[in-house]
Image 1 (cartoon, rainbow, N blue to C red):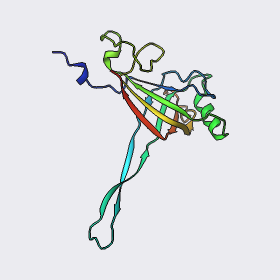
Image 2: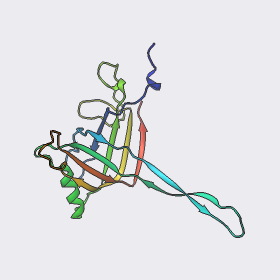
Image 3: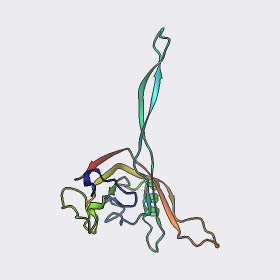
Image 4: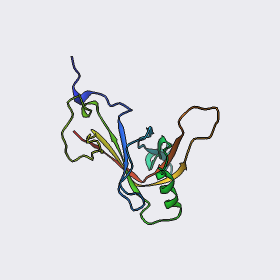
Length: 174
């Protein structure tokens, strides 16, 4: 018996990442990342004791957003991570951007009875995500342009970019 699409699980390997059209990068990024952390919000409990009270009360503290980490293989003549990082360091206008992480369900893939177009952001190959995370007011805080060099390794060189952001939203697109 087949599982209902609404109760089927998401898979980690079906995602795409893009950047809004900012002045320092035209056309956004291609969806070629090998790894991407998802947005995370945390909130600490703050203890407060008033007057003669014996026990403390706990209240919600200030929320914090974890940083995103994007990884992709190093490709010739593709320096978007470096360009964005140094436009931020140099204070170029419009260095903040919205980072959009699209999470695809198996039903959105060819051969699984894909979904129709709606208000969702589509990636270049025409697929529509089932869930979309939008991280607003994002800017880079760490850029590693390539993996550490090792003459005995046979791995692909991977560049990394850590991004700080102020808020995120989740849109379930069905």
